[in-house]
Image (cartoon, rainbow, N blue to C red; front, side):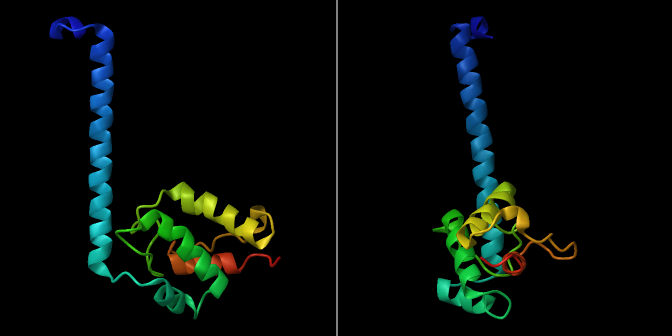
Length: 141
């Protein structure tokens, strides 16, 4: 490939890989921007206090604060979490972050092992509200 372009093979290979990575990055950025725009269009972004108040009927204040503080790190500055956001469809957060790392962080904060968390109810969609209710079903420290 490099000979056809009149450059060394290693440079041609490097340019190919860099170009490919730029294209993949641009597509990922575009998809994330579209996901954020869709989410913004269907609901208002609450403040921290509004989020905690909206979660209050179903989720403890401590768990609601944990979810806000954890989710906002991924969403700021363009979006704020909403209790009814579907973690898999509405927010640009990797599945392994909220399904693996968040429960571990919560369990560590509460002083128990994450393996002691209850099983996720099969009929619950993965919304922030349901995630908080599930975390609240955990063993108490």
